[in-house]
Image (tube, rainbow, N blue to C red; front, side, top):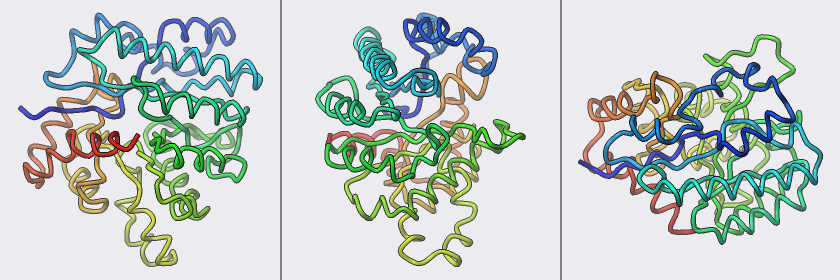
Length: 304
């Protein structure tokens, strides 16, 4: 059986969880999916692990910058990154690497933390979100994040969050729209062409982008339309075989990485098995599967 690296799996580290609940006691009621026991109980998580698979873990979308001032947010991000590193060290049978956090309300600390992550063995990149502090992640105030990540050869993991201006947010369609919109804004800001070393791994196979490839190609300028192909995407589509085939056809097999959104999506432990079954059933060759399962990620990691 082929080795598999799940590049987009989530955790809610226990110490960080406690600190956030002390500040925001009702946060888990606001976001019920964060109550999933496998996010913080790693003994239970091991019982449900997919064979021959290791996970790259990132924190759930619970961001210190949304609840704390710049200095405190930076402290919490550093503590979170240390706890994520400890999880990789303590559970090598489950976790391959971790993705760090940065406080976007403190750009000076963000650049310092990026440099710290670049030298940390257990950490392999940084998670960002489609919006930060009420602004698009592509806003010019965040450009230093992208510039520094590119300089340090640190990949960025792009995860969706709700746009709080909208009254009808939902986890069926909203996150896929927010991912697609953030990708468009990153392209239109010229970040992928200005920083060609930049690697951005987008959750949920790049949202709506592959399905609307025709609109992208016929409406946008050619340079911008082509820039969408620079993104990397995961396979977190809950086992949708045809959608996976479409993502591979659009981005190319070298830009698709195995990722499941574990332990979320399908009870009790995520969609890993369903996604693997869909990949095997899809019109994807064994050589392409190797690229998707681990070779693409190893190639990205080799540049860190």
